[in-house]
Image (cartoon, rainbow over all chains, first blue to last red; front, side, top):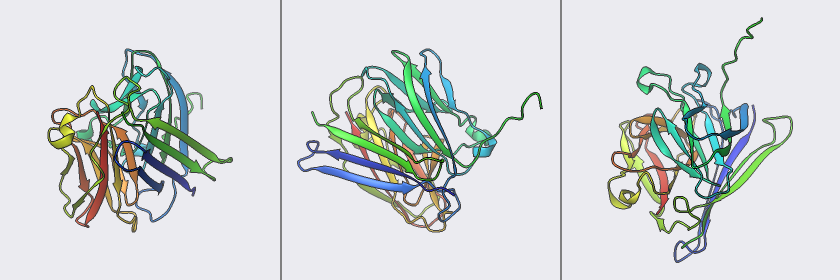
Length: 146
Length: 139
């Protein structure tokens, strides 16, 4: 097993009348375990063209109903460039240039869930994103010529 | 305007053959500008001991009523329970769509396209009392 931690620090000196400083750290563990760390990770950098909603992280049987964690960052610098993150046509929100998101992902393959793939669409200009998936497994494709 | 930053650090010494570490800081701004977000719900807690669906953030009410799809909003949620045996979690949903499971100690930080019916909800995996901490930065 591996030990991977995710830490967030939220801070501001002028949002409130006093300093805001909040920090949290979690260890990315497999679901149903006390402390068995996730052992697999995919890290990507991609250029997302405008005009199409893409499956950024497709659902798969190997990922279902367990602990998966997703990190996505918009690496553009023009503040008007954004991507919309959605699951099953439900928009989660917009990541503008420099914004990042980190969230658990269930990968729900039930019929009711329809399609739990994580989708991404770029607006204004093509957007460079980096994204990571810390996960429990991967559906490997048998080689076509095997 | 205010300057509020959100920094993430993902780190592992053994998930790959070399150490892995990513750190990035986002400055929380209004949609499509470099003007800092100035509204904040404050940090709040909500408890449940029910396995039923519970509204965490009602997009049509209170401060969250100002959050709309074309405005900028960032949501932080943490399950502050202990991890325990790892079988208890809170499922986070956006309306009826499941996003993911927060086990004890887990946190998430997402943009939120609010608007009519775009509530953020949670369901505990059982009747164990579960507490979430959460806040919203918005314009």
